[in-house]
Amino acid sequence: MRGSRGAIARLLVAMTITRAHRLVRRRTAIAALAPIPANAMWQLWLPSDMERFVAEADANADSVLAAMDKCAETSWMMNMGSAKGVLIEKVIQQRRPKRLLEIGTFLGYMSIRLARSMPVDAILTTVEIDEDNYAASRRIRAKALGKRDDSVVALKANASEALKSLKGPFDFVLMDHWKPDYARDLEALRRKGLLADKCMVVADNVLFPGAPELLDYLNVPYVPATDAVSGQACLQAAADIDQKFLKRAENDLKAIRRRGGDDVEADLADASARLEAYKRAAASRPARDAVYSGNGFATTLARTPFEYRPDTPDAMTFSEYSR
Image (cartoon, rainbow, N blue to C red; front, side, top):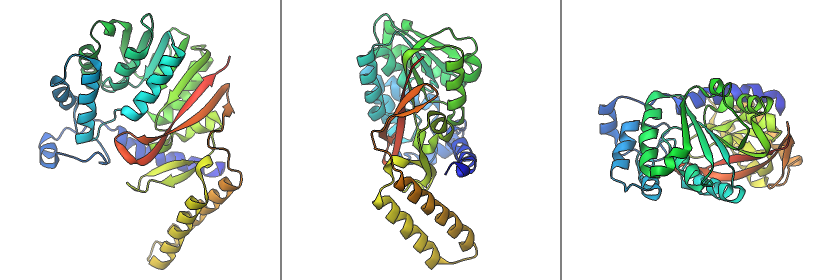
């Protein structure tokens, strides 16, 4: 299974570029297509569109978050969404971290959730590389948090560069930036002593679109897959490979054989290789609630729907670090 991971990573990088590309600036096209369903494959809204929704909200966190959810449900945007947001807020309230780091601010959705749920004497540092996103996030967060926004330190920087000058250690880290950089940046945090003992590190979208480098780093087994709704390449946790999943893969292989065509040999080879990988994963299948150990982290998977796409499965990793 590991031998195929380089190819998986290259495929996922190409797909992630589509998701993480700069916001589309053809406003006439947006007007012609809106409203775009939440299962759109890339976002069309601009930061200014999000701010138009937020302008209608009251000056408090609940109202601003609801407006941001409404915007993302109208034309999909990269907010983490309420299902993931509520789960992370519960962890913050239970663990009560004093120094928090968010890598990938986007428009401030999770910054608001983190800041409002952390202790009153805690500090949140959040990092965003895009200038438009950074400026909009500051305005949105100020409206949502009011005086509480004084506890947020916002940096406009490339995450990997920002890590070189950060002062730690942090008790909680949320990673929601460029997926191929997750493992590298987490190792940089660990190597530089920026993670406190028992620090909780949460990484989003580890299955859809997928973060294979991070899962390798954390020793979480997975296999390549395809999202049934969008057809996008993604990952499947090895712990979730059951007989139902195997049956679908077998049916896919049979359908390709029936279809024929010029490209049937390549498709058959790919489908056959996947089926064999699934069978191996099923044979050594870990428990769904398994705790995986790697590089000083004890990791569990939290299965959640992908933000604003309830029919697309995703997961977050929750990794506790031990010095």
